[in-house]
Amino acid sequence: MKILEANAGALTNYEVVDFLRSKGAANDSTRVLAQVSPSEYKVYDYLVQTAACNQTREHINDFVDKCKIYGLAKAEVLNIINIRPTSIIDIYTIIEEGETRFGDETRFGEVSKELAELVEKTLPPPPTDPESEAGINEGKEETENEEHNVETKGEEQTKEGNDDGKEETVVGELMDTS
Amino acid sequence: MFYLSRIEHTFRVPPSLLNLPIEEAIKGELEKLFLDKVIADLGLCVSVYDIKSIEGGFIFPSDGAATYTVVFRLIMFRPFVGEIIAAKVKESNATGLRLSIGFFDDIYIPAHLFPKPSSFKPDPNKKDKGTWEWEYDEEPYIIDGIDEIKFRVHNVNYPPIPIEQPKEAKPFAPMVITGSIDEDGLGPVSWWVDAEETKES
Image (cartoon, rainbow over all chains, first blue to last red; front, side, top):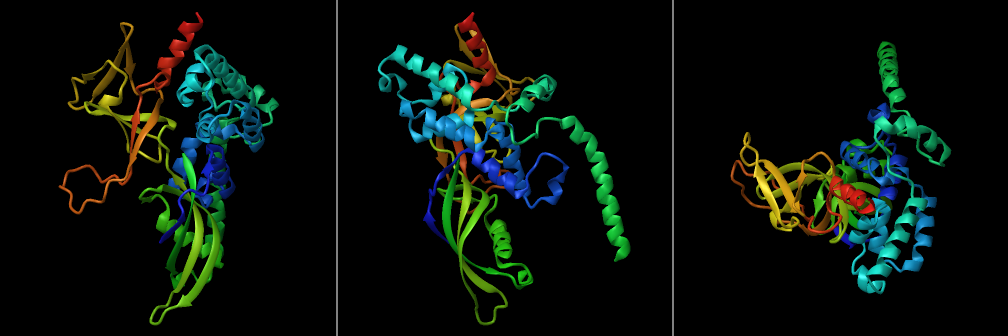
């Protein structure tokens, strides 16, 4: 085995989720039918709980364009896209040497606040708990989310019973004909 | 967290897969070979991203299988030093914390990378397990394992494979991430949500 290029590009969590989704990963009962292996599913399950699951390419491009003026390092932009920090303290942990790069402490504080607001505006929020889903359902339908995974978990759970029944009857039919 | 790595590998495709289209057969073999395995200095292989080129297909004498030289890209999980990751507590004992992110469990926060001063309160029922507590401004902040812990990657180690292991040792971990929570904003998420609220009020 030869390693041609150890680092052929960094991927944001969103890109990995997108790739796994295009392979067929999903949250509902079609899991067994997709060609996604269990270990890939573990990665998908972890990523779906982070801020990456509701992002789209437009959101990320939008954010990257708007934060160019701050001159952040690529690793810091990647961290911000993956974690979606909304408070000043979160931005503070991600940016290194912030005080020296942006002049002084107060200026850095302002920059952190602007960044936090930019993140809040451009990147969609991470999925919320199922308890508060009902209240947020309307909000989610208004925003342009491509994936509606979190929307109606209740429906999917009740559907599971029907789906299992359907699969069994299909298999039953195949067995009969063979 | 995730990188693409381009790799070239020569391997044989068993004859039982000859009825499949070539790309599917090769992808299946690659997944069997690399998925969920750690490659030293590259990280944990999460998925086969794509196949760049397939060459060969020669059948060596006395072998029934075709041998291909394939160039492909893998998605590797390899956090860089300084990255911030949120994980759940798996174990908490006197040496420190052990965290898990579902697909990867060997994340350790050693005792010296906790915010100072921290102390360990052993659990009266189970020896070796207990809770960690941080004292700040006279207030104890507990790591109770309910919410996620944000940590900064301090180091990523690939220990060499041991030749022999004593019978009851922990299973060998080919990739170990050492993290630190010794900074503002790191540690359980609930610690800093309270801090934000007190700041605003």
